[in-house]
Every structure is written in structure tokens, then in C-alpha cells.
Length: 356
Image: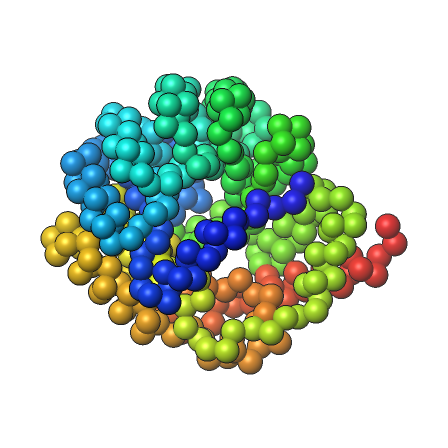
């Protein structure tokens, strides 16, 4: 199954937003609490028992964001459906006219089936970590697979678009074929990754919980080889080997801080949820002023100079958040990403040459 393609209109609006400085999309991190306890998570704070921002706070921010031009809103966490006031927040946001997407582990969806039927989100992104309860127990410390799969089927029945997000780690990589098979069987796009961000926001280190760069490349190639048909997989490999031209300047490449923002569970605005800085406080200074500050600080960020001349720059997914998380500095080269990218290129060469 091909990857989930972004509609051209979404791309157009973001390009327009970046040119004109409009926050077209935003993320509301409604909570850092979660009923799972995945060790590789960059945001879950198991010490947090209550949520710092009230429903009124979030709706105040939402109205200001709408006035500033925000169209798309992603609700995430932690596990956003854990909030007792989630229905109140979601209903109000839907009535404001936002195009809403939700990131969830899927275990609590059944409670909100009627709500989503009445006010359908654009998409629900469901984390799929394994193919049975024991796999979930191992990685998530919660054997909720059966509940997640049941919820997925019910949401699919009422016609809501779903995407599976999967993070593969040494603890669940053995599940990759089963996860891909579930995706194919249900006709739900799968977005897999073998890269996990160092959880710098939590002041933790997860080096022992992730693959080496070469392993990360090997496994994502293995996953893609299994889930795509041979012709599609080889065509992707050929495109990778073309080494398209990389960026011409070492500024932030993505939409973060240019046409999109992220507001953390404690009300701090950042360009991206994976960045610990820059930040501003929209509840104190107002959304528009906070957005202008984030936009200005994002413009100052410079990625490593050597990335511009690297032969792999056109296929490398390095971003400001990765540089900061891997090295502690936006301007330092993240060797993990370099090694992973080079090995992906080598694997593409091998796939073209090998007999099929």
C-alpha cells in the first residue's frame, strides 16, 4: 500500500502560510499523561497527575489561533482522550470550524465513537505497536491490543480516515510483518519509522532503547520491502539513488515556526514538539505576539553548514529538531542521522543489484 499522500490543497496552504507568516496549522498537546508507558516516548510524564491547562485555556488559545489564520489542528498528548473534558474541548473546536486530526494510542476511542460520528475528524492517527496483547504488554506496559483493534474497526465502520503510526524499536521489530499485514488487511495506511528522538524534553537518555544508525536503516528497508510490492519498492530505491539536489540554505527546512506551531501541555508555544526551544507563552502575552516571537526565533536557526555540501543532502531527512536532540545544538551535525542516511543509500544500491 502506498504511503498516505497529503492533499495538494494542504501543501498549497502551508506554502502560502510560510510566505505570509500565517500559522496555518497547529498542534495542541492536551496532556503529558498517558495510560501507556512506552520508554521511548519523548513526552509522557508519568509524574503528572493533573493537566496544567483547563478546557477554557485551550479554547481561548484556539479562538486566538483561528483569528490568526489557523485552519488545521492536531490534538495530541500523551494520550489526549484521557482528559475528562476531552469531549467538551473537541466539540467546541469542531464547532469553531477547525479541520481536526487526533493522535491517539487507540485504547480509549470506543468511549467517543458517537462524538466522532457527529463531528468527524479529518483523520485519526493511531499508534500500532504490535500485533497481540503480549507485544503491547512488552513495549507499552499495557496489553491493550485487542481493545485498540476493536476501536479501529468501529471507527472505520463510520467512515473516518485512519492512519497507523508505528515506531519500531528493538522490543517490537519482530512484529513488523504482522503489523504490515494488519495494515493491508484493514486497508489502512501505515507510517512506520525506526528512528526515535532522544527525549531531551524529559531530560532522559534512550540510547539503550533504540537501534544503531545502521540497524535503523536496515530495519526500515526491511519493513518497506515487505509492505510494498517489488516494482514500487524498486522504483523508490531508484529515485533514492538519483540523489536529488539538496537545500540551498541551512535554515529550518520544514513548516515548524513558519506556517505551523506546537503548544505544549503546560501552555508553551514552540515551532515543534520535539524542540525544547525557542519558546513563548501565548496565555501570558497573547497568541499573535507569541507566534511572531516564535517565527522570528525560527528564522535565526541555522543547521550545520556541512549539510549543504554533503552528497546525501537531497535524500537526508535531517531537521532542526533532530540536530538539537542528537547534539544539543541546531548547528552541529547529527552523526546518527548521517550514518543512517548513508546506509539507506547503500541498501538502495544493493536492492537494485540483487536478483529478485
